[in-house]
Length: 383
Image 1 (tube, rainbow, N blue to C red):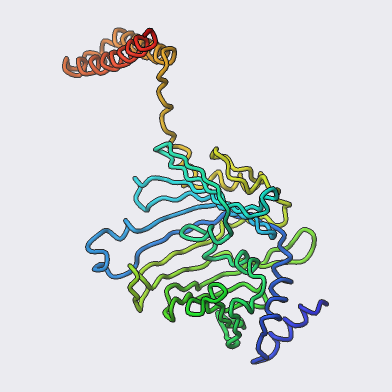
Image 2: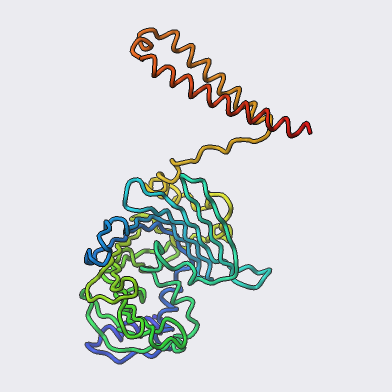
């Protein structure tokens, strides 16, 4: 039995137990979470406004809500990718797709942050790349609200982040180490208070976020799930949680004003698959290389299906050949429609003269527009 395992068992077994030093905590976290070489999963959630109506000045609370479904890839050398579909709670809301990744570029000896933003029914796609770090993957619709592996991996020395053991507390029937950890080196007034389940992967099962001594967010109701590794052994991962916000427009509130439920899709977790660099690259196309099993799970996501079903119309060609092709296609369609009108006297009889005239004028007008464009283009080229 390893020294770290013995330390964990000894700490859990004692009614109160000694405190944890920053070095001890670091060793336990590295040992437990180091078993995870990489993983991939699908997560989903919903964000809602739950505060008093007067602070949104009569607006519909649904207008502030979001829903999301995403794929998350992680490798313990710092490579990560989030591929998330998100929209408002209204059925008419736009579906937007974000892809964000961090991956070390050996040629530049730095971590590159890449992001693509795609809007389904507008056909908009923007891709950017720049030096960055894993923190740039945080924010709304991010699994970072539930999973802290990336944060713990990025901390080289916990003591530099102001690690402080406070007590052993019972949370949801589990003995947990309550610790204080700054948001970064030197940020003493901005810190986390975490309850760590030492016996199940060293994951936080409750987290309070403090800024200048005031709690702004709280993560609780975290569920941990055990996974057996194919190479032997087991690991734990958070699969569900609730995040509540206690601030609106920088004003503090004693009760939650926002609430977010986030969970991992059952059966979607893939562990230690040997994810390669290509998985973490954000390209100009909507297709992300993924493992077959995860792609099969993702195919059924409602937001993903909504995104793919709302494809924009292909752009109109401005060259003479393209205009001629569109003109021929419209004339062919018009001829076919005329034939169907002639063949269907019963249907034609049910139409009034005004309807038919409108139909013909719309078709004729479209043809005139295309023809005018062709003439204009050809006249310019002949100059």
